[in-house]
Length: 299
Image (cartoon, rainbow, N blue to C red; front, side, top):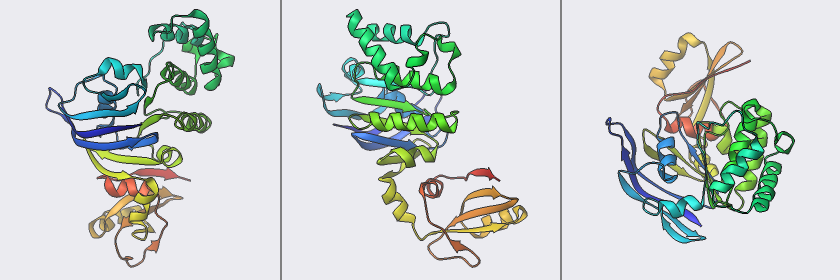
């Protein structure tokens, strides 16, 4: 099973071009869609999830349980196979997780009450929420709400799951639990993980794409993308007051403040004078492709 996107474009009524000739082949397993805020990730996710119309292009879900589906035209059939956790996921605060999942299962066509009860219990166990099944959703922490969101997305045993910025705002322990859950789900389904957090893609995804300003600017296996820039990333610690001079002379792709010093990474085929070699990682791939740079602070 795979999702094939060809020349997908979308321009909103206000003239904003959200997507421009996006073409991707997304296989079964975890696929990372990486890009800054406003890059077009959510527009692409909403289009795949049949929540908005495309301007042009084509999306095919191939070898699904219902055969090959035209995502843009066979919306009802696609929705039967789809699980979706949007970036902004609201809950009914005065309803318990157990009751809400039972209600959603009914809306998805599971009419048998005992079957729904068994399904809800299994889902709550899968996302480690059995202990809180009677609690109102309004009392849940951010991580618990995200796990509930995955539980509702899994109703109906979907073949295609879309999660949009699922770990934003989670603490490290919650992120780790969420990573483990997504990795387990991705063994038998297509899971598209849309995020601006490079570490999430590094930890979870066997294939990925980087999107910026509505266009795909890199795609492939994370290890292959890293290999492409290996031996071309150099670092140096400088005073912050020197940064603009280095920007004028070198292709600075990232800066990081460490112990009062500014550490810069530059991209260059040859080693610049005064710089030392550094092992490239997916962050370097990301910042080498994205216009602009990160600003991080570490002790």
